[in-house]
Length: 64
View 1 (tube, rainbow, N blue to C red):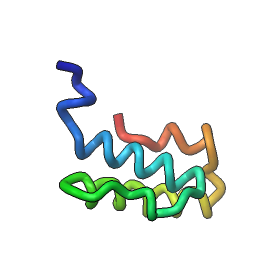
View 2: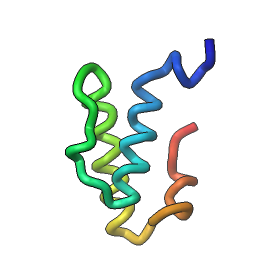
View 3: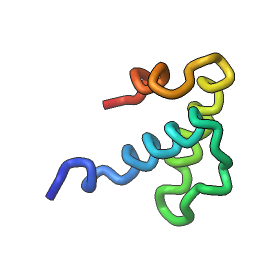
């Protein structure tokens, strides 16, 4: 099994962060157990978007 599929919270955070940085709506948030992680990532991504980190400039801030 792949590592990214084992850690669903981390993956949800990354997807939420990328949606936030790209200026997408929080209505795209998945429901279920990954909701909290996705929303946390989205909020951080929106904050970085407002600070000027858009697109590739914000990718370096993702936790690996």
